Image (cartoon, rainbow, N blue to C red; front, side, top):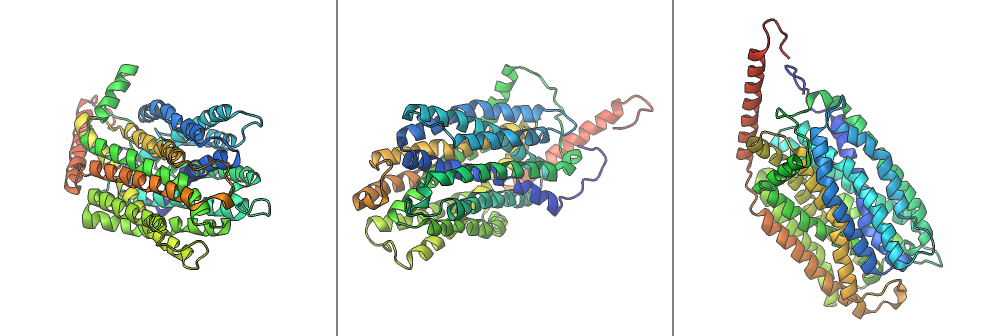
Length: 495
């Protein structure tokens, strides 16, 4: 960070570029969470248990690699700062491994298919983590303002949702078009070729825009800690243990694990419900995905307001529970034969309305939780003397990966325990099959959200405590600067 230089305010261009970078993870997330299980299970006919287990095992790679990436980013010294070398370096590998995941060689057994999924999904997620962790940590360094952080991460979530739902809608409209052979276009294998290649290209563009658009802030953000760099595995482990001693971080991490797993279950099964329960066409499913984009447009201006009205913890907690209860309510009504039947003119509009309100509530909760994690960085710095944003956001990245890891594993459990068949003809799906799917899905997703909300209840940082932490850190930096000037040789320039 430049000394004795006024830090200019964030411009709209910087905010937009930083937010735009989240589209990469949004596209990867919707592809892996929503389509990967459907593609390998219903299109290629691989057992749901094998697919979901292979994807869940990639979390082992994340568990090891993510904190290492976070610490390396925290400790990096370069003319591009701590974060940007990783942002630029991850663009091409992320796009390449994402695309390769969808093109397994023909003739593989189910078990070898599982190995293919594990290998390339792991590489894609590892490359995405090399970008996402430093990029998310960068957000905590762009501003220390309590409310501005909610706006900044809110914008990032807006673009993430845009990537998620706009890409999903585009794919359903143009890649998965219904044909006489495949009346449900999302089951047409040829559509997955342009789907994978387009997604890869957009991921690379999004990452590069984030890096290039925020490069002007490099001179003004924290580049190093005052504490010395001590290499070695033991030092790394000590810093990780220190992070997990922070109560505020533990509550956010626990909340994140359960919420992202629940989101992953929802994402992995949403096309199953749309295809087999509501019997929607690919065009209707494309329209239905837009409720997520509408939801984040509603959430973006409301997130700072709910933060002001309720505080960050209460906004994250209560809006999450309201959202999930509303979002699962139509399935409960379907189970009791109280909802609109397939083909009813009010079915799609009702699902759109419910989805928009549910999505807005969950989006505000996610935006607020990310802002809370940025506040934890200062809380830890007061205690430890170091700014470990990379380590903390590596944990956030790992928890988000649970959406396409534990979430898909849980979705596989739902499909297996409900005995929903693989590669089934949509015309042969019975009401007993869909009822079994619903009764196994709803308790799991509501229970996951409930446990997460119970954990976040114990989050201790208020706005007053955050402001006190920031003031203490500023006082420390001023004191360190004063000592540096006093210790300088006579006549030496102040730096």
